[in-house]
Image (cartoon, protein in one colour):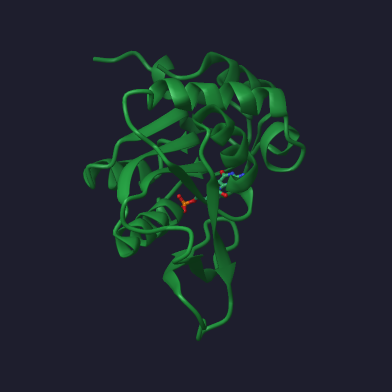
Length: 199
Ligand code: 5GP
């Protein structure tokens, strides 16, 4: 089940841009509707109510807001992976590389060993899932840390891109609150996965 309130908001305020980009600056990526964020956080909590989570991990910058509000439903701290352009990172950190969908750049991404380690039960949260690079990077960091990956919560999955398949094939429990199956930059039309009749 996709989240109706979220889908309505995407339909109303989302803007389809060329290059498979959905702009949701009105409520998620620039201006942030924190009441909607609360509902999203509660929905993640409902979906992951059967598992133990002691930490939420996200990636800067756009995941931080949603992860923080979601964390209030889980009562756990949020750690965000930091993007850095420093090649030789000093100190006790886990590192991986992530190719950014929106900027087309490759970033080194780090998390301090102080804030993630064996014994942690980690839920990943991010705003979008496109080609899966951001989530793959976060999964790498969880593995490096020897922590347990409980699942991943995504606000908007673009179902026509490969990320969802890649992450599900890894056996990761992935919960996406809205799955855009197709979108058209010319007409602005957005079709969600659960609106497509199943055969
Ligand atoms: P991926 O790593 O799965 O290819 O892309 C996910 C990341 O790219 C997310 O963290 C998100 O910030 C950004 N992103 C990917 N697609 C979109 C999109 O259509 N709209 C927006 N606003 N961000 C996107």
